[in-house]
Length: 127
Image (cartoon, rainbow, N blue to C red; front, side, top):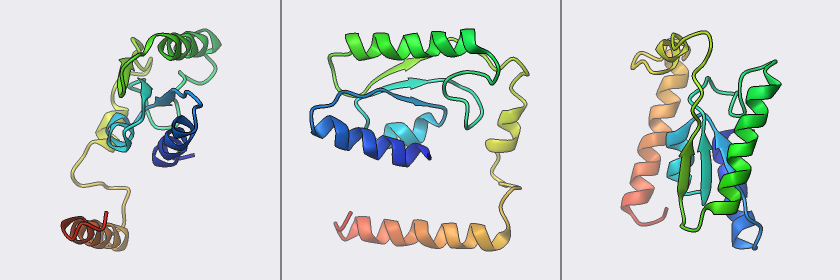
């Protein structure tokens, strides 16, 4: 499930009295959605609970989330997990680049059109 969907589901659960903690890798997206509690792990997308085949690390990240659930008393509380990706940070070069080499020109054009449409709706107070 994508970060936005998980964040929005968490907000609905919170509005209905069910406490949540979102465990994420894309901090900016989840913060923008305004979740109540978040554990951020600075890993590639798809690994918010720890590295694959590392159950000890995954348990530790889960423990961080449980502690946050017990102790967070103010809205929008974020905890940064202490872990570093064992294979280094070269993965960030593929993600944090203005060129976005993984996108075709058509995909980028549609994305920019949607972004501009959203800005227009926001300016008109419809979002």
